[in-house]
Length: 417
Image 1 (cartoon, rainbow, N blue to C red):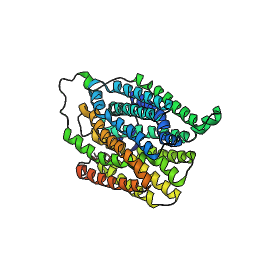
Image 2: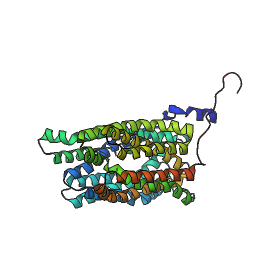
Image 3: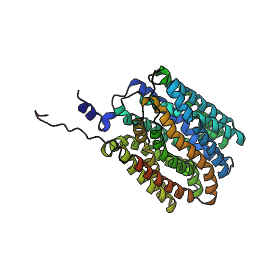
Image 4: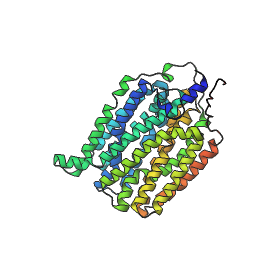
């Protein structure tokens, strides 16, 4: 089979076929983890609000979680490249389970800080190694399809988990004849169980590439390229910290929406979000990864500005859905594009650096956001919109002339070539 025929088979949805057995186990791991992580993460801010903590305190807890998510992002990626990506995934999941257990048992504010911190550290250790480990399970030319399948599976399951999260606290309270506070804790406990369960599929995978193989020569670290890839994410992270963790509370504060209704909106968003992940590789094939990212992010920025400028709940909800779907749909394409620009020896570190830039800056802005929401519900969205606009322009300036669009081979009929 010629190279052009191989390339042709990978166009469109055909790129999703032929996933390896180990990749399937990793997809299952991600799905189970999505359930375990989504239940408590979606409810955490609402739970703290239910306990009577102010928006400032909620912001501080989210700040601790965001900053701790970045603490080991760079060393975690480095250790994964050197000592085993699979091993670091297990360590990260164990830390997440421990952090969630502390949140379940928390009966005073300091324990929420500690639990959020441990959870965040587990995230920072697990994430860069998982993506690099997952990327090993397919050819480079199919990576964006595999990443999109991962994000699709994760987000689709998250949609169902969010829908359940909006109802489970009340269901648990009614079923066991207890109060809503215990209902929240029981829902968190379900998440903890799934975090433990998601480690099982990892047992059916094995290490393949990386520094743990004691390579005699390691490719030099592409510092300049990593800095360029991470720079726009600094601005995106700051902006995201102002709005993303507060969206459940925003709808409650502004429209007094019931928890179940918020869960339905977020579930619908994640469902459309998952479908967008499947479509993004096709868009990237037609436009190129860079142009696709810029185009989709621009649509998201326009929708973001529409949220504070619209007064009716249906319109705000529509802008929210567009913003979330469009902005997040670019992640697998961005990660795949980034890996194509660095040597394999430094892929975990590259992804860790990018995630560090996003998470650290987003973690810092969460703390400020809690204060700003006390002054104005609209101002955080305008700040985020400006930061997103600058980040999109910066990405275009850095990579606009380095796109990866390929010309689709044309199959001619007849005897001639």
